[in-house]
Image (cartoon, rainbow over all chains, first blue to last red):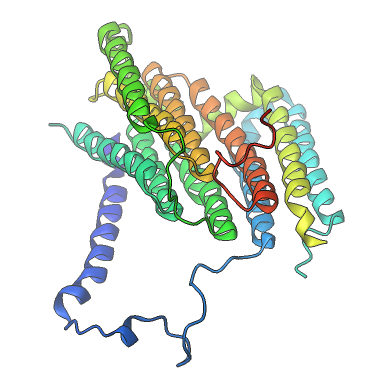
Length: 122
Length: 170
Length: 101
């Protein structure tokens, strides 16, 4: 069984080796003559202001949170879609109705966020 | 050493070491990145256990979505490095002793009870259990009520998170 | 099944203990939360291990539900941390003591 996954593991191993190689080969092969000017953050020739860890807005949090909720919704739909024909022949429309209820419940949350103005960027 | 055992040792080592690194880093971003590594190696372990669907869901939901949310919040709040661990002195040694004691207990119980002898593990049954089809059949026939409850839980989470985080918009 | 089931269980126990140690030693609310996620994942590993070795998909179904609960928990918990940070300007749980009597 696990033998079928050997290509996947090979791709992962290749990706790791390639990424490490690319990052560290320039360190190993290129000349290193750092000066304080070279190490400072590039800011169009200006003197850098503040730290690079700038705070981002709460808006991004809301987007990421909605992404998680709808990500999970899709994950739930996926096994349903795979088994739909077989289950429909076995137990009839109830399998369709149950997924419909699930989606309606989730869309209520979507509507709530929409009414609250969560999708407005400004 | 079989291929399975080798891959298990690799993934288990990555999972254990990245877990320890996660709780010892003082930068929160580094801790989050090590947690992502831990979750990804757990997906590899799930593949070893023939749980293909759960492995994919682990990568999509945990390593993909939940950790993105964590990283967003870390960037949002920009936490400074922890200067003091805690006001209570000696909590580090206390925690280490407690953790070591409980781990020795658990390992003793696991190795002593020897659960492998009671199981007649059958590879085809295990492979069939991990497919999307078997999980879908189980979910949409016997576990339909927990499924709808999960829908309501997600609705509650959406509304709760918006109510808690929204105030800044006004 | 070439790997003994005990190996997976011991790894799961180790990860759980790592999470416990993280919750006990760290004082940053987000890191505590991430340690709780680590403990949830070690429980997931145990569920998948037994499900796979017994050959019954119900354990993996429960892992599915645990992931749903973890996502909902992350959404609400991080919103609470954001609200706390807005009021107290700190994430050190020793300084967040407004409910302490």
